[in-house]
Length: 106
Image 1 (cartoon, helix red, strand yellow):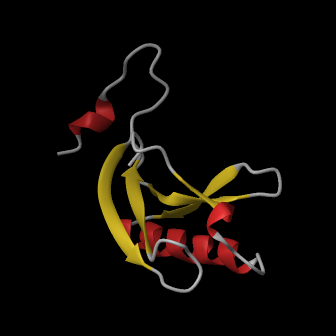
Image 2 (spheres, rainbow, N blue to C red; image 1 turned 90 degrees about the vertical axis):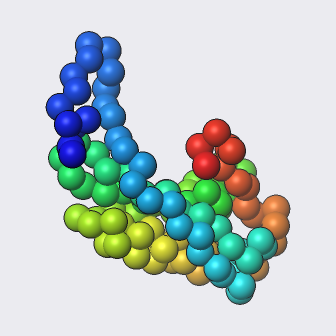
């Protein structure tokens, strides 16, 4: 049932469907021992994942891990791998290096 993909309303830029939410246990780099990933499907059938845990850059701006795929599983794996790469680029991480996504988004 992909009828939602056919909805076209003037002024609406895009519609994406949340097709999955996953809890990821991680004990070495993150301060909370877990984080979440939401996977969204777009109208073209492509999938994008976002972490609820954001890593701050040098200016204090937080960025989520983002991944893409042709399936939910590919997007999930890509998101996890990208986020772990983000974490590995920093030498010493502490709780102040992270922020959580707004609860409205998760």
